[in-house]
Image 1: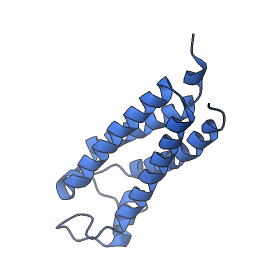
Image 2: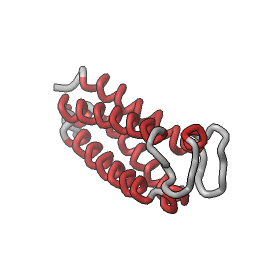
Image 3: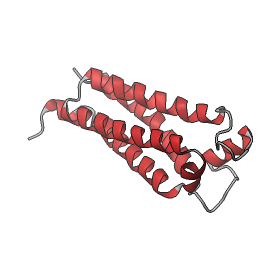
Image 4: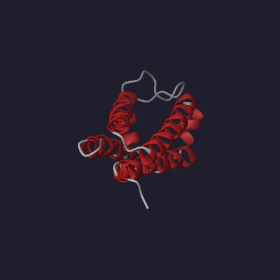
Length: 142
């Protein structure tokens, strides 16, 4: 039988697991990030680990504080993703404009065969959902 704490935060935990899966998918398929900006790839790998850890904490405890931290983490990741657009020379030695980089990240027309378009925007939307759902579930938690 599930404890009441486990029931609280279930949707947040599922979203965190989904963000981790998408992060792994990006790491496995986006050759550009590994070629031009490996530090971003390692950063994304760290995000995946944190997503998994938070999902575990939320599933095990389901407390207000674990949900609050998860929501803030979702917001922080979304802000970092948008901030990547404004990072100077996002592809290191390969010059690309901020506009083209935004198109690359959000799958809005710049396509190459070295990545799967729309994984990044899907991850971005899920991070916003983590924020919203975690704070919604937090209202019901102890």
